[in-house]
Length: 66
Image (cartoon, rainbow, N blue to C red; front, side, top):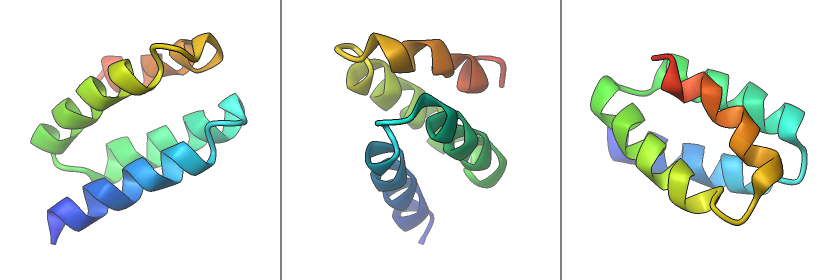
C-alpha cells in the first residue's frame, strides 16, 4: 500500500509541474504523508525529474530540509 501512495505522489507532481507554486504545495503534502525511506526515494527521483526543469529546481528546498 505505501508504494501506491509514493507512485500516486509522483504522478501528482508530474501533473502540476507546469506551475512551481502548485509543485511546492504538493511537495509539502508529500513530505507530510510519506515515510522517511519514501522521501529519500522521492528526493532521488526529483533530482532526475527536475534536471531539465530549472524553474522546479528552486522548489527542492522542501524535501532537502527534512
